Amino acid sequence: MASDHPLSGYGGCNPLPLQPKLKTLEQERQLIDSELLEVFSDAELRFGVHAPGGWVLRKRSRTSWDYAPEIRNAIKSLQPQAQRDGRAHPLVSTFLCLSQDLD
Image 1 (spheres, one colour):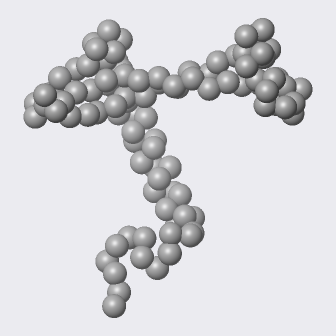
Image 2 (image 1 turned 90 degrees about the horizontal axis):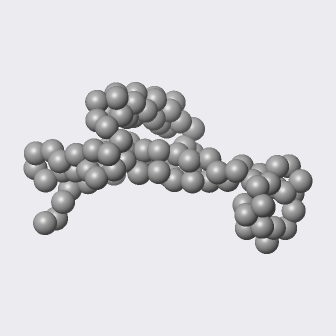
């Protein structure tokens, strides 16, 4: 019996046919996010912009670290020290999150 699920036949093991679509969707999401970031202030997005139906649009951020090559190749225990002494610097990603209030 054949399944109508878009991933049937791929067995979940071969994501290559999905890569172009995922890339396109990510580009569309980034465009929408940039437009929303222009419309709403930083404070509005940090505290949440309320929409009909109990939906709330909020701005979130995530920090990662970009290490110098000598640190990247060193033991992971050096990472906290490198973050403290300036041999690594933070990379902050900002994204929007749409959630529904349960209150």
